[in-house]
Image (cartoon, rainbow, N blue to C red; front, side, top):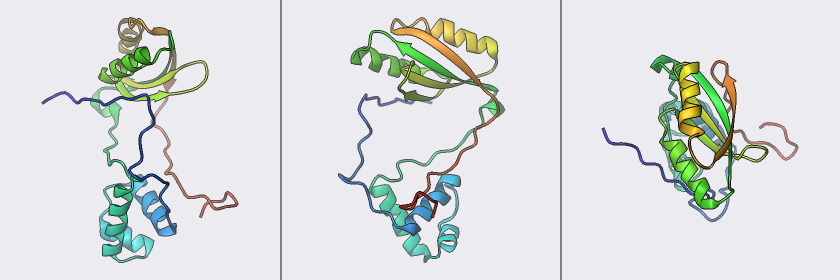
Length: 179
């Protein structure tokens, strides 16, 4: 099997359309259902949001075309694959240079332990979500792989206990309450 290649840019991802798409309450209901379970059959989604299956399918296609839905992924439990320990690694890079940052991002994403990478504000520049088998493997990752990179000045570790609680992005009314 070939290696996955990651495209990295320091710029924000570009939307497919030039303006923010206008979504109605049915679009938001579809999005909420798909964020919770993207494997729901179209007819079930249509029934839950109160539209015909053909209308639902066209709305989902439009949400993909306008960039609202950008991907469909499988949520994998690392613990069932021998990666029972997860952590957030707060990384400071020095110097603050675009080429150095891009190089760090490429190298961090290429690590098999990396699940996600965030560019953040505050005392760290990046937050790396990793999954490893145990604390020894975590220590090896930090010392031998991350701190060995010339642009990594500091690494702060936060262990993650259990799986995350995830909520879908929801529409908010003008008064701030959920619809």
